[in-house]
Structures are given as C-alpha cells and as structure tokens.
Length: 416
Image 1 (cartoon, rainbow, N blue to C red):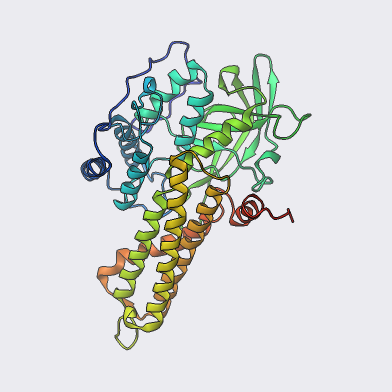
Image 2: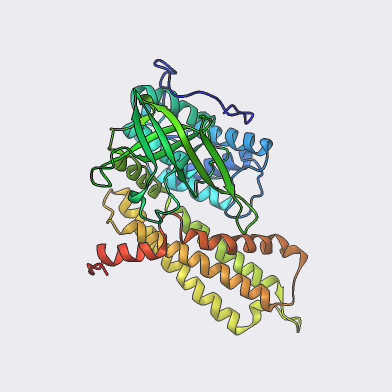
C-alpha cells in the first residue's frame, strides 16, 4: 500500500529488490534519562493527534491511515523502532533493549499511537526465518510504513488451541492453494500483508504439519469482513480464503515447520510488557481524577467519602503489586533469564486489574449525580476502557488458559 492508503498489488519479493540499509543511531551515546527526554520531545513534535478511544487502533479514513503510516515510518527512521534489528537492516550496534521499554512507556504517557503488534511480530519472524529475498522486499517496507501486517492465526472452532486449526494449504505445482477461514484478525481490513498459519500435512502430529505463509491481502480469493464490536468500532475481522494461490516464495521458514515461526514471533512482543505498568498507573490516576470530579446528590465530592477512599486504596495496592510483577518480569527478560510462566503471570495480572479499574470507574459514575464538564474527556475514556477491558482478558491468551499454564508451569500442579 502506498503512503496515500492505496493497497499495492505486489505478490512477493523480486530477486534483487532493495538493498539492506545502514543502521540508525537513535542516540546511541545517550544515557537512559537523556534518551527518554529525546523520545518525549520527538513524540511531542511529531506524533499525529489521533483521539482514538481505548481499544481502537484502525484508521477511520484515508487521512488517518496516511498519518499512521507516516508516524510509524518516522519512528523507524529516527531509530526508535527497529533498533534491535540486525544492523544491515537498520538496527543499531549494541542496542540496549531497555530503550524499547522507554519508547513504549513514553508513547503510553503521551497517549500517542503505538507500534502495531502484528507488524512487530512479522518483522521478528522475517528476521529470524525469512529468506534473503523476503528480507530485502518486506523489511524496508515495514520500516517506511508502507506495509501494515495482520495475523491470520485464530479460527472460529479453534479457540485458544491454535494447533487445532483447519485452514489447508495444498501443494499445487510449484505453489499452494489455500482454503479456510480466520477470525479475530486485527487490522486485516487495512493490512497489506498477512502472516498465515495453515495446515500443509494432515497426516502428522498437529504441530508438525503446519506452515507459515506470507499472504498479500490483495490476492484473489481473500475476503475481509470487519466485526462490529460493542464499542462501535471494528478492530477485528473475519478473513475468508477461497482457493488463494500462493507461490513457493510466500512460504516463511521451513515447509511443515510453521509452529516455531509464529511462536517465536509471539515471544518478541514480551519486550514491551513493561509499558503495561505505565498504563495501569495512568488508569489509576484517571480514576482518582474522576473521583475528584464526580458529585453525589448532596453535592459532596466522591473522593471525600471513606468508602471511595477505601476502594481507591485497595486498587492502588493492586496497581503497585502488579507493577512489581511486571518489573520482575522485565528484569529477567533483559538478562535473558525469564521463566516460562513470567509472561502469563504479567499478562494475567495486567488484564484482570484493567477490568477492575474499569468496573470501579463505571460504578462511581453510576452512583454519582453529575460530573463537571471539565471531566467529560475522563468520563469518555473510562467508558471506552470499560468496554475494551474484557477483550484484554481474551486476546493474547484467555485468563482461564493462563491460569492453567501458571498452575502447571509454576506451581507444578497436575492437569485437571
């Protein structure tokens, strides 16, 4: 897709397309505090104003789409995104992963548009498993913002058990014909490329017979249907693949070896888990602001009531405890010593507390008589956060599934 929002019709990499580019600095000689100051200034000067409610990331028109693509390209161009890539593809020498956390924290604080997780996953998978031709074609287009990616993983009957998927990619000459359906594909309605997991060998173990594919979303046979949510937005999509023809150049990684490709990419998202602590603190601060603005029928402020103060104290305790869990996870990630249950623990704590904060805000609004006009923006944010909160307990691993993983991996309990 070009920068104006028109989807390109390419079908894959040309043999000699684009050369690797030199690494960006992103201020390699700066300390963490100096780097944070640079990031804040860059965001303040360059980030587009996109007043999306929480949970909304997809552009609402061509102007917003162009702004998002330009902004993502600017973050890569400045060396803030992609700094951990190999130097020949634009990464920085001796990159410090702490800077990735700083970037995400500052984007959260500024309520600025954040990097698209599916694109980060795709870049990681391409770098680790892609052919030279695939890297030459796709990586520069990710850096420029020309290509947005989506994930074509989940299916209607698979639930949280991805390996049970039924989308087929059958060999046909020197390529494949893909038939199946995907669901909950974020950003599919404006993505240029999809990372697809499909079954190529139904006769072997279900994890062994899967292959990862790079799918041009403009390919013939692909139908994308956005799913309208209770927020009014349509961030997720159904994707139907009806006899979609893909060449051998669209296979990412080894044939029948797609499981490590997609799970390795999913693991790359862990680097940004620390930014969730910043969001929780912002949500709590917003809740306190709401309690100061809300008035009960007798005219008193909500925050002056002991029961509200008690509720805020309990939630603050949970916020601080969750921040410790996240900080502990980040510390082990940075020294490459994480436990297999670290990610599930941090995600479970964050998403469940997000729901609790949203419920507290809506209870406060329901019991108060009014909120001053000055607090309307805070109120609107809370309605969106409340509606989006439940989705967070499902996406990236449902809370019920995560509790089962934690019980077995951390506590050593038997499978029920």
